[in-house]
Amino acid sequence: QVQLVESGGGLVQAGGSLRLSCAASGRTFSTSRMGWFRQAPGKEREFVAAISGGGGSTAYADSVKGRFTISRDNAKNTVYLQMNSLKAEDTAVYFCAASLGVVVATTTFAYNYWGQGTLVTVSS
Image 1 (spheres, helix red, strand yellow):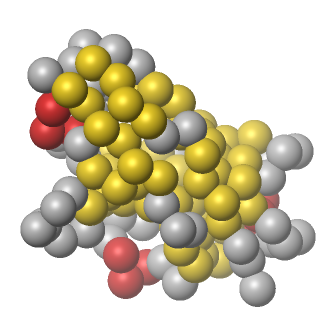
Image 2 (tube, helix red, strand yellow; image 1 turned 90 degrees about the horizontal axis):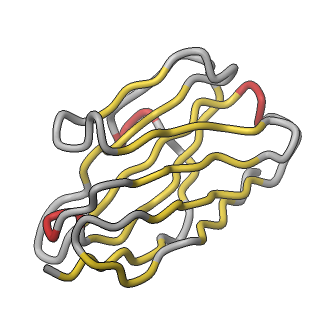
C-alpha cells in the first residue's frame, strides 16, 4: 500500500510561483511512476505532468509546458511540481498519483494510488 500526501498549495497572484510536494510512503517509490493531475470546479480531472521511476523521462500537458517542472528525489520519497508564471486558469485542486512501473503515463487509468489533493488558487 502506498500513501501520498500533497503540500504546498495556496493562494498566489497571477504570474507568481508555487512548488507542490508529494511525500510517498512505501518501499517501491523508486520503481513507481508519479504524476500530477488537477481538477477545477465543474471539470474533469486532467493530466498535468508525469515522471518515470528513475526520473529520466517526463511528460507535460500542453497547457503547462514551459511553465511547470516535475522532479523527484527518490532518497526522500518525494515528487515535486514547480509551477511558474501561474495563470488564473491554473486554479484547481492538484492531486499526486502513483503506480508501479517505470514508464511515464499520462492518463488517470494508469495510476492506482492518489493523494487527497492540495488547492491552488491563482488570483488575476
